[in-house]
Length: 470
Image (cartoon, rainbow, N blue to C red):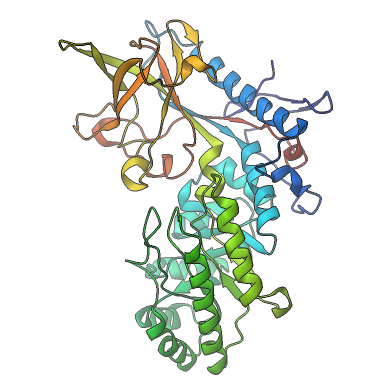
């Protein structure tokens, strides 16, 4: 059984089921040294979601095996009767191979669009290191995010300060660091930039229809087409350098037509800018991309719109700001059952189970990101059930509601779910697709910690070339 990349600096053992050989590497100080910044060697066909050949099945099996081993190794070594406080805390398993595959999938579907990862979605350091090695840029919205990315050795030119309304001191900070690209959407912001950082390279963020998205951003940001011409005129009068247009159709968008309309509107603004003497060179199509099977449809509509309105021969650079697309499916969360309450009625018993994470922790995505995490049984009755039929919910099993650990009555993860197993204190649940807007917005409410261990694995042999572990 392979060992894993963890935050405890263990040794890697990559078993490539396809070629039946093993890559042996080691990790020093828990830091990845990614030297390969050229991803032109990548076989983008490996990124296809509909790739159902032998190799694809083996990769999926290898991913499950690595994640399952990491989960088992952790939970089976905890003695719940005698462990120290914190030993049974919730933890993540992060598969960096999934991040790699998502990048290949992006290259296949949007080959002309360079991703600038939205750091706010999940600022996990090793996730950022992997993305840096893959050559992505970074969308940052605060001084701390910019500083974190720069500390990885990322060039300032690979960062866009994509915050239309910025703190004065943060503008001075990015100026001192040579981060030139930033967004604006109003006249007051232009005057601020003219005063603090007139050398900045500016993107005019325009308003879009984000009514079909999970999290609407147009309520807060974006200039309407009625105002873009006057904003460009003001930027010219202030002597500022407008280099592009940006938009965002909302986080977790579900209507691909929103991308089409936004691209059409951006083309209008490009024409307006030319009339004011600006030679725009970049279009930023923002975020909104999900990691599920809707991505291909969304990308197809966007790709066609870009080819129509910003064809390759136009020389316009295309960038995007995906966040959840890269992070969501790469992280699995494991939670411990800390208490159980039996609810008796005339027909049958049901149970309230309390776990050591909740809405104020890594399940903040339920409130802030409109997510619906689905519980599965990791360990129950002394057996580890990961990725087996017994781990799944059923229609006619024992009924449970699942609650977080705080004293707030809204701290409920699941209203009703049924399992074939009887859960008890000391058992474990796991939740997949927990990488987006989870750990980044966790709090310390009621004294519970908001930092949790992450065990790192890599299920993609193709990523081995990027992981120069020594």
